[in-house]
Length: 408
Image (tube, rainbow, N blue to C red):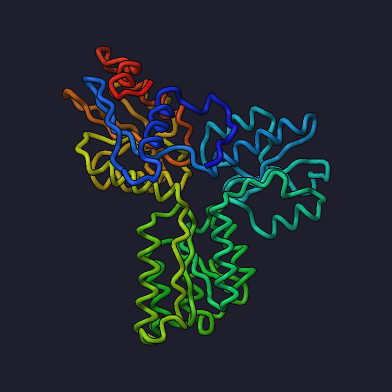
């Protein structure tokens, strides 16, 4: 796999070294068991896969290249490059301005841009409407387009579904940049509709089964279907794609639900005429991180700490998985660990910050699951580990751990 040129301060001499060793001993990714780091009074289980993925490293490399190649020019990002606060702060510090926030609210009006400006398209991709706006302004959109290839793969799958006259059901979060981009592209190929979870999928299923009126359909799904969408006509042949960072098990369950619904209505012998059995469009990194998290949860631990941006979809899903089994704390950086007794963390269900006291149990050893989302630098995770280690003065040195693992 390609090696990207990203700033060394995003890597970690400790964690990145361990990850590199695991890749060398398991190149085909068959072993999802975590790595145990036994520091004595505290032990960490770190996931087989976590942190920067192909798409993120590609985006960062392109963004830094844009700055290097365009001295003196105004450089803009459509929105956050990735959902990680430290990376986005670094880009701002380099002089890159953000045109809009993650919800699509404008910071910079389109009429302020000129054909001399550089605009970077983030890893989530963007809508056809925004692409057309940039082209109209005379701005070149491909040179610094960092759209993740796995997002592009979803668009290609959508195009294939459209050519085969299937309506596209997108499993994704309605307001997420990637889902907005995918919805724009898929709507250009075929009638499209977004469902965020199984509850919404079953509501859509009610209409398909004839148990919901057209009026109720429009009320429930208003704003989440393409222009000219006719539910009576466009829900006879369907296929499912997804926002690449959704839980794989959720996407599969939704696809299976629509497959069963179509088989019940139209007969199993006619299923191919009503349901496109698409391959899962989840990206490999999201899938690997989720599988590695299942591996983590097979171990007995006292708590889990998941590091990443609070608006990161793939990170929030890792939190979901962990909190089903044990106390789980979602933090974005080491600054949220206030002391050995206090931790500030994010409740993504309620979208609010919480303060927890005595989050570290009084026992020896304390066992901590530590992982991160696909947009979180290894260096940030390493900083979190260092902070936690500082509460245990008698811990082994990192050099000793690497030596005991046979890693130089």
